Image 1 (spheres, helix red, strand yellow):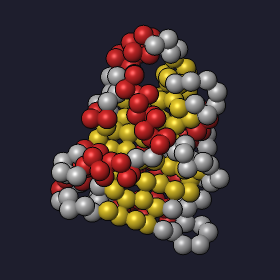
Image 2 (image 1 turned 60 degrees about the vertical axis):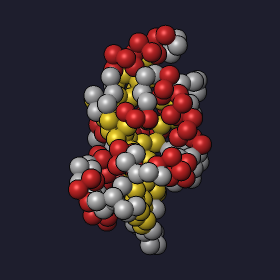
Image 3 (image 1 turned 135 degrees about the vertical axis):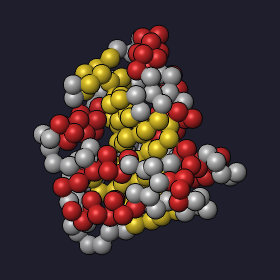
Image 4 (image 1 turned 90 degrees about the vertical axis):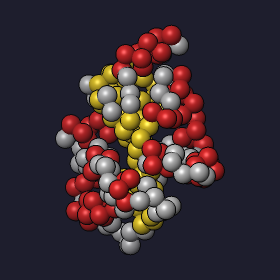
Length: 198
């Protein structure tokens, strides 16, 4: 768990964006109550703030790994575009592949469009933690997405999303159960459009 063994590494990237443009951040707090206690790394970004920068395209290439690019391509097929995402927070479990984070996103998400696009592509809905989810392949390690509301979604592999949904229901301990990690996340919440802890 973060904060229990050794020191906690924190990074912040201010990128010249005013504090007022990142004051609305609340996704870090949502991650504290959604990510499992075994989360060892958390990264936050605000694509909505970053899209205002003239060098956004090159920045995007740096902070977006191969797995996220693959997920983005898949989500476009379900009617969710990159421009629909305002905030993004990623987590990694201990020993997990860096290629497969789990996470939360805020933005504009339409459950009806998502369902229609999935049906067009013969992607059957799955029940994940009592919510309707869509998996973009077969097996426990395939990328999946669950809409938690019109402006909040969760994504990850089927196994990591199932664990996140257990955390949200209180069946498993959350990352926020570590007071040190919760304090760091709360302190960073409006610090910058990109930050992370490990």
